[in-house]
Length: 388
Image (cartoon, rainbow, N blue to C red; front, side, top):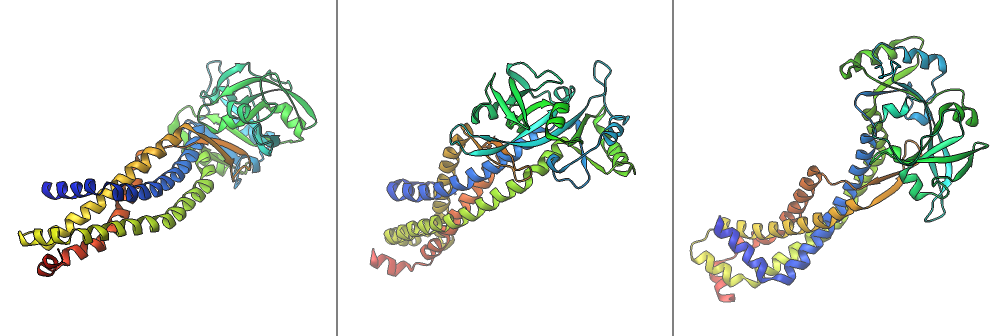
């Protein structure tokens, strides 16, 4: 086996140019595949990381998102009194009643309009989101027309910097703070006082109620009680589950797009590998005949050429992954299908993606080399020596 590995690797080094060109074609396919899957993974990771396992989101039953949900004050009060709700250090229940609406802002780079989430928050909201840190300025005062913007919004949109003034919902709002929520969806939102937002937007109901569990194992109990209460038309989800559901449609679309594109591109890469390997067989007819005359079996010749093709696939996979890994330095934005708002997120490379990309590249190498390998193993010794 070691001899076969050395033989295959040596032949690739001998044909440096064709090896480089064929591996580059495979690398391009792997790069496209990896980048799109990384995009889907980054989207899902951003939204899932937005939630905490100990937090519960309560929405109107069958509402796909907070945008479509409505919870009146009476129902919110019932949820607030559930015995599974945790208490803060001040003895108050860790419950936040929030409003989620959309406004339209202009992007700084292109000037095109895009939807941005306005989240009306309660005094407890920040306690439920420890990942949110103040980057500049201060937090808005309750009962005021003051807002704070997520770092992604402040970077990408006009007039959302510290001290700037925004006009929406027939009110004038002052940006008094910029917050950093890390790699989460909150960074793409603007936060203000929930009561002022409800008045300004004419909304008599909350969009959601979020609370912290005193014991994470009690989720199923409180979920069943809320969903079976005849006074309520609500459903409860763990926060990560809720945000994961938000990402499913877009992530699925990106993955289908990635599979479709790479399926088309991979045909060219496989054909390129096949041409390379057929050329290798044609150029080494005498060498193959000599190996057969020395006692090497057909199966050994077959394996040797397959290993050579798999080497090409592996090199292409490693190159594609290497260049795709640099995409983690970039941030992109798109419209979330569930909320119709802009969401900023980055590319995310995981071990699963690396495994899939390398498997895919090896599969392309196998497809490109299997027919030439069979041809090499079937060559007649006498006729091959004559041609040599």
